[in-house]
Each structure stands twice: as structure tokens, then as C-alpha cells.
Length: 192
Image (cartoon, one colour):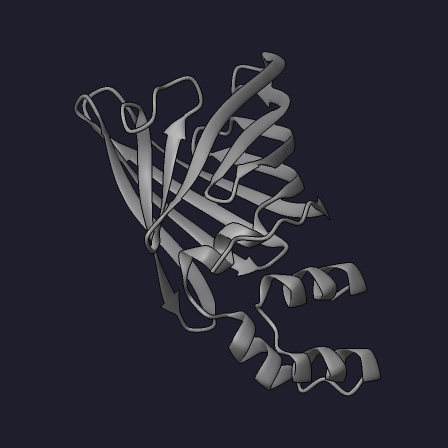
């Protein structure tokens, strides 16, 4: 873990003074640090999101999207998500594409709305974080008319997220996997 990320996590309260001293001294107890860092809650996950991420998306129909995503801080409980890149369809057609969402920290959940919708009127999914093994997992579903989107966000590490979405219904039937790898961070502090 780089020094900037350690400092950010110390400021955000996700590591203790003792753990910070161990990191600085190069004598960090990896097990103790990992147990503390993987605490499964929305606040911890939410504070790890701000920054720029490389992204690679593939779908079950062999389409793909490669580009960059960013989470920008709006306030202590709101992030704007924006992705842009090149969409390549199975047919061979490719074009530039963009998409946006707004992330809200609410209680122990993360609500994700479509970017251009009024708050609570255009919700894509509400993630309920759970600890599964050593990973934080956010799960939720969304019904788009009669097509159901089952979403799993796997927060592998603070710098690696895998999104798995299964879509089933009368009009749509496909799966999609997106891998986000952090390029750089923007820190901010969420009050306790």
C-alpha cells in the first residue's frame, strides 16, 4: 500500500495510530491490518471510491467497453460516477460511449441512481454490503419494466473492484463483468 493511501486511511479512521506506526516503521502486521481494513460497511467502501479508475467491461455477447471511470466527491454522502471509453459491439462496430451515476451513502447502504434523475426517482440499485470471506460484497437488484438486473459489486481490495451484473427478462438476457482498477485517489473525510 502506498504512503498516500495509508495517510488517507489514517485520516479517514480506517487504520489506527498503532497500525500507522507499524507501516511507517516497515513492521506492519499484515494480518491485523487486513482484518481492520476489511471491515464490511458502506462507509469504508464509500471512502475508497473517490478517484480515477481504469475499466474493462465484457458481456456474454462478446461486446466490450474499455476506458476510464471516476468518482468525484459532491459532499460527504454523495459521489458522481462517470465513465467514458470505447464500446465495441459483437458486430465489429465501435464508438465512444459515456455513462453516469450518482452514488449516495445512506445508513449502511449505497444507493446508485441514474445520473440525470431526481434523487430517489431514478434508482438503479441499492447495495447492501456484506462480508464474504475476506472481501466486501455489495448486492442489489433492479427491475427495468420486466427485465431484472441482479448486481454484485465485489470490493476485492481498496484499489480493485469487480462488478457482475446478470440481466434476465423478456427483452434482455445477458451478463456483464466490469473490472475497475484504481489509477489515483481523491481523498475526503466523512464525519463520524
